[in-house]
Amino acid sequence: MTAAKNPSPYYQHVIASGLPYERGLAHGQQAGQKVRDNVAYYKTPGKLAKLETMEKIIEDIYIPNIKAHYSAGLEEMRGIADGAHVSLQDVVLLNARYDLARLNQEEASNPVVKSTNGHHARLETDDMTNECTSAIFFPEATASGDVLNAQNWDMSARLWLSDAIIYLEIHPDPSEAKPSLFLVTEAGQLGRSGISLLGLGVTANSLMSAEDYCPSAADPIPVLPISLLRRMVLESAHLAEATTAIYNFPRHVSNNLTVATADGFGMCFEITPTREYKVYSSLDDHYLIHSNHFTDPAFLARSDTKCRYPGGSSWFRRQRLEQNIRPYKNGLVTVEQLQRAFSDHLSFPESLCCHPDRSPDAVIGHLPGYPFRTSSATVASVTYNLTQRSITVCKGPPCQGSFQTFHLSGPLSFQGLGTKSGKLAAAQDINRPETP
Image (cartoon, rainbow, N blue to C red; front, top):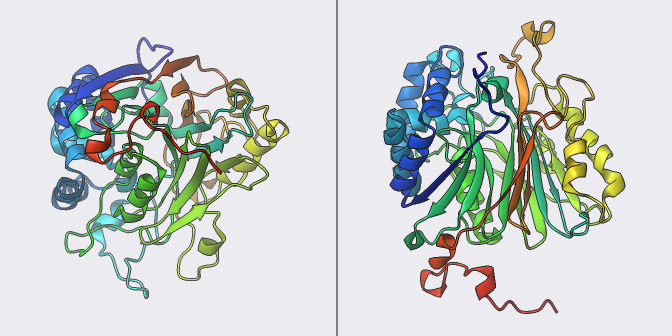
């Protein structure tokens, strides 16, 4: 793990505008070295699957399916590749990093079999697990009356120590009828979490289920890298369009999306390759928290699949954050309180506020099927204020990071969102009916 020689207390802020290729090109040009470093890291033997396996999946499955079902995303990735002087395949690899981490050396050499329910059966080993804690706070819970979507993003500590993350601000061309976005992401990716100028926010959590599988070009159902779904959710005109995207998005791995809107509503979507489980907050609590294991009773009751989360901090991080914030749930939650709550160190260093363990898994690392391979950390802590369209974020763990606040604006995003486009117009252009 190599730390940046002269680390900045902040991640780089990349601003890109125009048509998909143009903004991708700007992304690649501004963050080129970070993109190249990320590509080199994930191509290192042992980090993901065998290189030849990944290349085949990228070339035969991901690129054709992205072209068919999300062509704008492929063009943006092509621009990133040209701007950073890497191949398109390299950028697709970065955007499929989550999915490819589900594959490993054994999967590369063994065939994938069909389960009794007709779907692909998951091979008996897993690779890396990525940890995150996400939360939504509704107007009734916050002191400002705003809607907050917050997250501690836990990943390989390399991303933090090597300065491999960027803040990506996107302003699409007016002809696309898409909103401006602010995303926290690895350099070279289209997004991990973010906010749109229309007031949608998405954070996410890794999930692992027995349904997850290695895709084949012979599959009749196409699949895409699941991180692209987060970007598609943020490009949606409203929550209903976002939920439709989640239902219809073809994938081969599981994930949780924590989605909220400035309208004062939000929910979690625990999704597997074949199903979507909807998780709602208690009507009396006015908040919703998620970590890295399935919680929906319908999933837990199934006998044909199971959660493959291997144990660890996910089993207490959700409750720990709730303990820290519950005394303030009735209109007293602030961004500053959230920062303190997310800085909790129960079970340090593998805590809600996660820090690198210099000897990770020294005892349990030899247990069969155990997936952790690298030292993890909270690489960024972010709160998206969906009401104010503002972002408060720090580099690294929140207990020691320096927070910055950004404000998302951009008339470019609204010029194409009128009635002629069929999209939802800008909020200031709509006369909404009063709630009866």
